[in-house]
Image 1 (cartoon, rainbow, N blue to C red):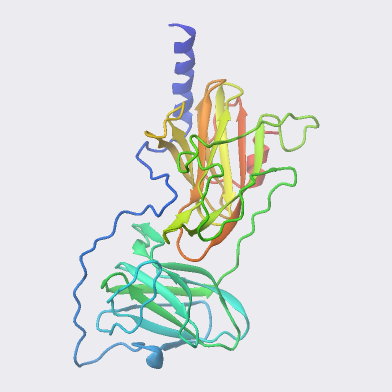
Image 2 (cartoon, rainbow, N blue to C red; image 1 turned 90 degrees about the vertical axis):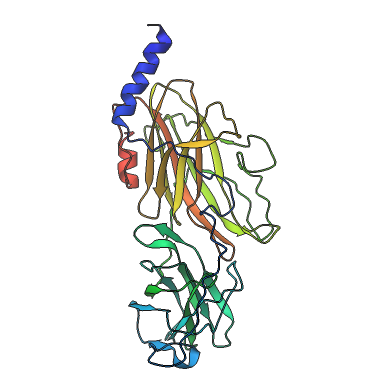
Amino acid sequence: MNEGDNMRKVIVMLMIVAITGTAIAQDLGSSRDLPAKSMTEVQYTPPTGGNRQGGDDIYSAVPIYALPYTNTGTTNGFLDDYDVACPYTDSTSPDVVYSYTPATNEAVSVDLCGSSYDTKAYILDSALTPIACNDDFHYDDICGYYTSLIEGAVLTGGETYYIVVDGYFGDFGDYAIAIDSFIPCVVACPADAVPEGEPTMYDGYADEYNSGCNGELTNNFQVINWINDEDGLPPFEGCGWMCGKSGWHLNASGSDERDTDWFVATALTTGLMTFTVESEYPCNIYQLIPSPMDCLAVDASLVGVADCGAPGTLSIPVIAGEVVYLWVGPTTYTGPVLEFNYSMTVCNHEFESVSNEDMNWGQVKDLYK
């Protein structure tokens, strides 16, 4: 067995102690990546009489007097009174309406997690002008598929707002709704971290900054530079610390498009490379293959999720000199332009094992003391 075979054997053993993701095809593009929706309209005929649940329109809206507020119901049996493009239009789904008048200025979230159909949620002001809307946010077995979440809608104290539970393209059914005050997450980056440098996004923005395999520039990966430790204090030798920025906007064709950040690091030593991200908005984090990169065959080898207060960490077995490709991007992205910050650490040390699990920053730093 030659030296290269010995090295590969070490990597196999390291892979046993690292929790790895399933190497399945991942959509790493910047455009909306949920499975394609059906274009077959659900046919619905509203009832002509009988009892109906209240809240059919703004005049019979169910009032909400205090937050947090939760309820369940159905749009079956209601009329199609309203529609908002976000981004889909021409919905014929029945809808229900809630009203809320905040005492003071506040930001709120409206979550339809647990609904049984393809929902759409939006908020109208007293002039029936939409101020927030979301069609697709959740896509899982817990919250449902194509169910909606509005985060951080800013309301003015004393003004009445109408919260509408609607559906996509005629779809209707049972829904669950949770409305609460929204407290924005703030991720503090280390003062000595390197700024990623992403330009400010805007509608029509063309992402050519560390755009990897997405942009017009070929293999546009941002290099992770290792820090030389001189004082024994964070950041530690063999680590790269970065303050990143991501988000989404409308592209030139008017479709939702996210900023995806692609990075490359060269392993210093044989062992494990750890990739840790904490983000103000939920993000996917990936280790990409192949290496060297082939944008026609790019896939995710390890996957994780990073959120505020819940950093995600990938542990990657490496050989000294190996080139590793990393990726950060929002899990969902729709609605008005939004930017958020994230903090990223990449470290390469020789140690026995690191578990791919959520860790706080203190735990991350303790690994390298």
